Image 1 (cartoon, helix red, strand yellow):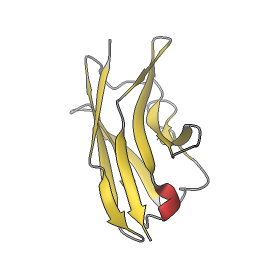
Image 2: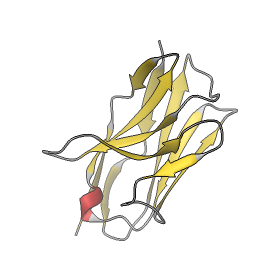
Image 3: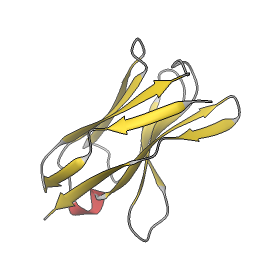
Length: 115
């Protein structure tokens, strides 16, 4: 069982920044895919950014150039730096890891961007 706990969300204005953190317990960061997803009201959950292995990162087109995913392997924390936030970035953001054939999700954290 892997526990993922997100933090760092909140309410900001258009153009501002936030940094999300995902702390993992009972899991050590290695080569498994790990990243961030989000779900806006009335929409399906979508991929935002993440690591496909130990080193390679991927981003949704809508966040390229604005969001940066990173991690601290020593602390087992995954980050998502979000700059130039827009109202359509408003969603619940989830941390995810695909580990030994199973998917694990955090409970999610709200990011709300006002215009």
